[in-house]
Length: 118
Length: 112
Image 1: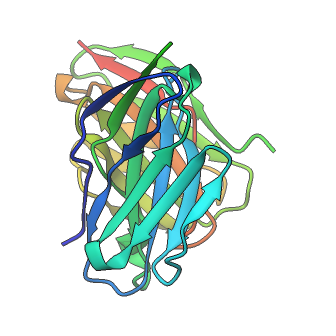
Image 2 (image 1 turned 180 degrees about the vertical axis):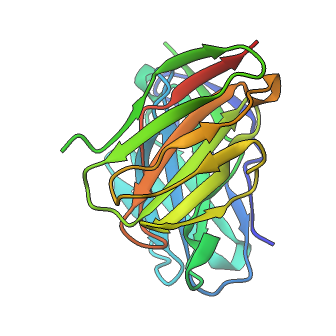
C-alpha cells in the first residue's frame, strides 16, 4: 500500500538556521513521483518540486535543496539560512504512475509545521 | 490564465442542507480531483476525474457527489451536510497521471 510519513509534526528554528524536513514513502510501484508543497498561513498550496523515481540526483533551488534516496525511500527537504517567510506547513506527497485510475492522484503526508523565529 | 478557481471561499451550512462547491480550470487539464484537509490529517482524496464524463471515488467519498460534463468544470456536491464534513476543500488539476497537480485556493466549509 502507498504511504507517506512525515515524522516531524512541528519544528521551530531561529532565523538563519538550516532545517531539514524528513519524508519517507512506501510504494510497490517502480515508477512514481514525489512532490513537496508549501502551505503558508494564508492557506493556499504552493508547488515546490516534483521528482520521478528514475532521477535520484539531488536538486538545489536557491536556499532550497532536496535529497532523494531510493535505498531508504526518503525524499528530504532542506532550507538553508531559513527566513521568517519560510514559516508554513510543508507537505510531502507521492503519486504512482500505474495505468489510469487513482494511481495519478496524490497521497499526502500529514505535514510538518515549520516556525522560523526572528 | 486564472489556473484553478474555486467558489465560494467560505461557506456555513446547517446540518442537512445541500450545496455545490464549484471548481474550474482553464489549463485544458484532463485530470481533476477534490481533496479535503482536516487538522493533523494532511489532504485526502474525495473524488477524481480522468476526463469529461469519467469520475471515480477516492479515499473518502461518502456524502459527496461529482460529475464532469466539461473539461473545465468539476463541481463537488454535498447532498445532506453533516458536521463531519466541516473541512477545507481543495480542487486540483493536472495534465496527466503523475504530473504536477495545481491547486485552487480552497473553500472553507463549516457545518453546524
